[in-house]
Image 1 (cartoon, rainbow, N blue to C red):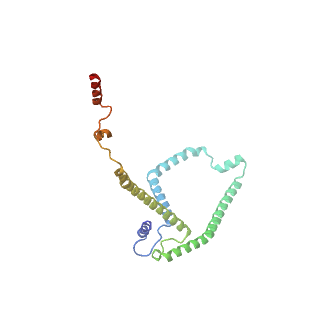
Image 2 (cartoon, rainbow, N blue to C red; image 1 turned 90 degrees about the vertical axis):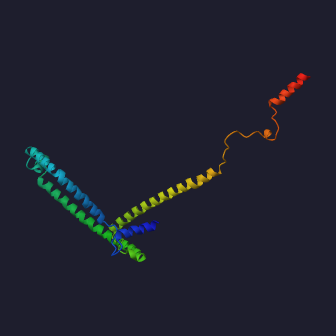
Image 3 (spheres, rainbow, N blue to C red; image 1 turned 60 degrees about the vertical axis):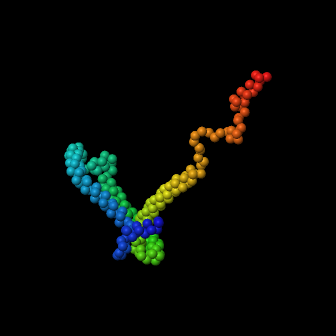
Length: 223
């Protein structure tokens, strides 16, 4: 059942005919980010941009007369540090950031190469095992990671649904069959008057009945 559901999902996502395409790649992340940014930009431009621009212009016009023309130079003169030295430090920090970004990009590219090779090796064996689904699984580490997370989520949901169905079916079985058998096996109590005593059933009167006592009293009076 789980395998059939997974294959049905793959078939629905890839299409019945034509070349197979990866089900999920990192494009879904970038596309989702672009969608959220576009929605935010549209809402901001339609409802808030005009009010924000008016408010910022009003704030700037109110604060500008009280601020010096060269804020950085004024601060540096009060602190006692040359402005040129501060600007050089800022420029050095920007250069360091750019160099660090280039360094990280190169290291990530070097690390991706063997990872992409390992992913390609795994995907090639998968496609050799299931040639009909060639091209469904991406062959880069980023796309493969997103694909693996997506498949794991789908399998988790399917397993939860199957377990819920099994628990529901077992509950019905327990209620209908087992509880029904227990009820049929219990003795049914007879309604009405209680059963007569054993002595009365044998035709003998009980010893504490009033008739023998009356006969004994009559004999004593005759004597």
